[in-house]
Length: 447
Image (cartoon, rainbow, N blue to C red; front, top):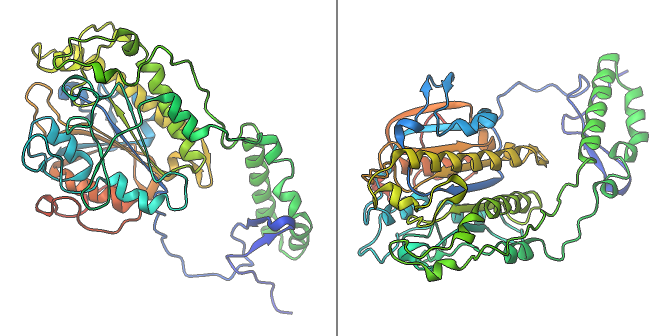
């Protein structure tokens, strides 16, 4: 009698179109072993923080695989395993006004064109990826900002406050969403999310139960054990998911003390204060992050960006006990490394929160973080000199096979090469991006 065989892609199908994949079994036709390439990332998140860093308090110590986080990076300790510190990157294409050029270049890899009133000459990475990753979803991309349009921006679209640029001729600047309430209503208003219990009332194992039992009878002892172990894993996953809804609507907290349009009343030097709005920044930022994560989890979009202010950042930090704006601590009032370190460390607590939320949200391939590439960047390195060498960049997530829990040191690599690599991690195969004169190819060592 011929030995019973299964195709390695075999699935069990049950009532209602339910199907479950099988584990590898000896009954499956053997194939020559091969190393499978990691699947491309399904999502991309970009986060911008103003002001650069205090480099001596940012750079880790140790070796690539055995490194110690610096004081500024210490808040990332709980998620260190998901983080890749990318060191030694130079933003060579940031040519133009000292603040504007860095922000324009950050995701476009292009120089500022002409006068300080102009933008760049290409699309931003997030918008290029939106057309690839968000096909068929409600939103191509989600852009948000907290305490945006300060100082000389006066609450208007300007080269000092735009991160994203359209992937269309003209590369129009994209203003981020500022109002947390209207953003919540746009994303989740009127959405009825069934409870997890209702979604999982009937086990998928129950749906294929008869076929599962029939298959088990035809298998050898070793394969039956594997099948039972596989069933146990599926049941465990069902029970885990049943504890929380797959797509819960984030709670809309009271933000009545926060004016999203306060930038319209700003003064050039930050002399016009809105202390109530400044004091609400932490809770509004948390809400923005929660909405971003759920927008990704609910397949509303696959691409999102968040700006923690703009390049001016002329707002106060009352929750940190700092009553001057960031630009004052950067250079307007002389360089204040202690205060800058305090501010930049706080931003990294927010980064850690974002990564924790992504890591705790189930997805088809494990968690959202497993399937996502997250980029944390800024528009310069040194707050006092506006230098753009040794940029303080971070990558996180497992999308595209990104290898994390490392400190990757490069020798002055171009940040354009990093942009190329981020595209590659998300399945875009191109070998150049932005101004080609600053590109040598993908940045090695990320996977």
